[in-house]
Image (cartoon, rainbow, N blue to C red):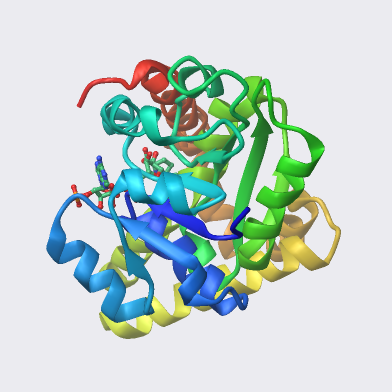
Length: 270
Ligand SMILES: NC(=O)C1=CN([C@@H]2O[C@H](COP(=O)(O)OP(=O)(O)OC[C@H]3O[C@@H](n4cnc5c(N)ncnc54)[C@H](OP(=O)(O)O)[C@@H]3O)[C@@H](O)[C@H]2O)C=CC1
Ligand SMILES: O=C(O)[C@@H]1CCC=N1
């Protein structure tokens, strides 16, 4: 069997994965892509030196198919693909919400399916990819999936029942941090700093805090206490965050993301 990998529907996350595989040493001649618009396919070929094929050609030529279209486009893609996917292909879905049974019902009996929820920091090899096996996926299929996703960050195996929560926390997670940086930069401007300086200060605070969270082994409460001097500045900010219900807002926000992931289980609606 060939060892080619095809990314079907190489949009934002598909291209991020593709670039990561190339950085990790996969030969671009072993990487295939599909796209809906010819100009998108051309762009990917020029940028990454990969080969653009049709979805049916990808199914025939690659041993591993990474499906990265929107959940709403997945049924149509599977209708097109199903007649061409031999049951020995590993099918990896990166789509939010869509369960492995959705694929298993539409592909040949016995096709191994793995559900993965990556996030965009795969672009800088700091991604998190949360992995669950479908009915016919073996340890070897999970290991193959990890071989693809580990070079672009961490991987974590979870039961599929936890994927909607993982999507809310991890798949969508980077967006919440960008949102916070944007809001805090606005605060810097209100306090009289130029935008570029406010941006640099907040980004460096985010990087420093992230590295300490990752490397210190300390609980976040401990790390926050170390910043919060008695009768100082930080506690005044924390009181306002609590007064405005930021903790409750974050819990509600992630719950809403989890609920949307559940809605996408059947392909969802726009
Ligand atoms: N963005 C993110 O941070 C993450 C996204 N995901 C998941 O990844 C998937 C893609 O998301 P994202 O990359 O943001 O979306 P994009 O819209 O950027 O990418 C989807 C791509 O699929 C292409 N496409 C649609 N139908 C077909 C088809 N039948 N054949 C070939 N190509 C097709 C689209 O083409 P065209 O541009 O021409 O419409 C588009 O380029 C979603 O399922 C999402 O849940 C998972 C984790 C993180
Ligand atoms: O917003 C979305 O639906 C996708 C899935 C996780 C991150 N982006």
